[in-house]
Image 1: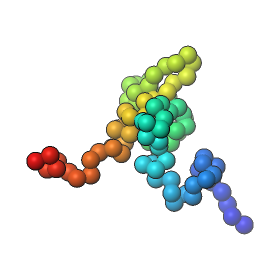
Image 2: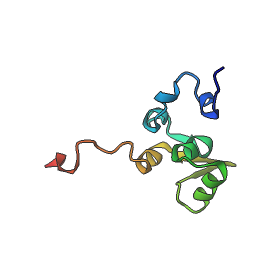
Image 3: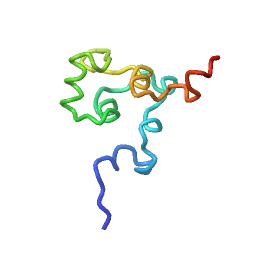
Length: 93
C-alpha cells in the first residue's frame, strides 16, 4: 500500500522528485503574481501562520488586492535566488 503525503496532492502531474522550488514556481512571464498561501509559504518551507506573520513583518513582499494577499513572482524568485546568473561575478568582465 502506497502512502501519500499532503505534498503529493499539490500538483498531480509532477512527481515528488520533480518538485524542486525552481521547477515548481512559475516565472514572472508565466504568472506575474502568486498567492501568499500556499504557494509562497511552501516555497519558503513555512506553515500558514508563519507565512502570514512574515508578510505582516514585511519579510515577504505582498500586494493587497481586495481581501487577498498576493506576492509578485519576480520578487519571490529573487528572494529564493532562483534567477541568479549561474556564471558568477566575473562573467561581466
